[in-house]
Image (cartoon, rainbow, N blue to C red; front, side, top):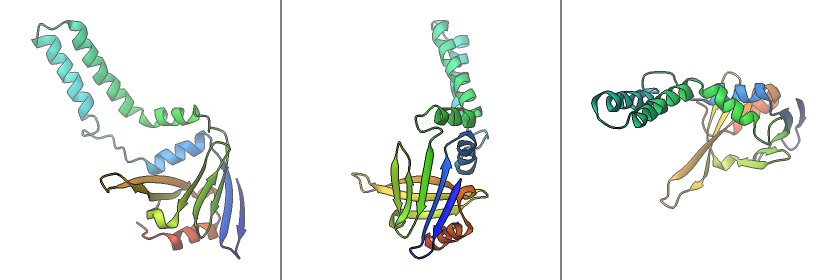
Length: 176
């Protein structure tokens, strides 16, 4: 990770690698998934429905076992959500690439071989400081019905200087 700061134009530059540690930190700091009864509700309903089909109806048992298997697969996918997400990111073409992060008066610019993306400060709706970084909530525009299309992005503090961290704190509309 490299850092440089230009105080005259208030521009901060850092770089980091999209590796397993980075993806894992992104997930743990930004995920809202909790492992409670509500999270497993769909899996439980599928499993119980499959058991009812198997035990109480004359329907072909293969269909019942298929529904039960779907319920069990849903349970496994919820339980192993983080490893599955990290593996999918590691299999992407952007994995192991170097990302240049520039934070300036216009917004936040991320540049790599695969993508160039800018989040403008005018589009930022909320900045939440987490233990290890910042969650940047921003608007991507409006739908045909006039609703905001919201998105979020994570920036790790490990690649930011203290000045860049303070700058993000000054630029955001609301700190939660």
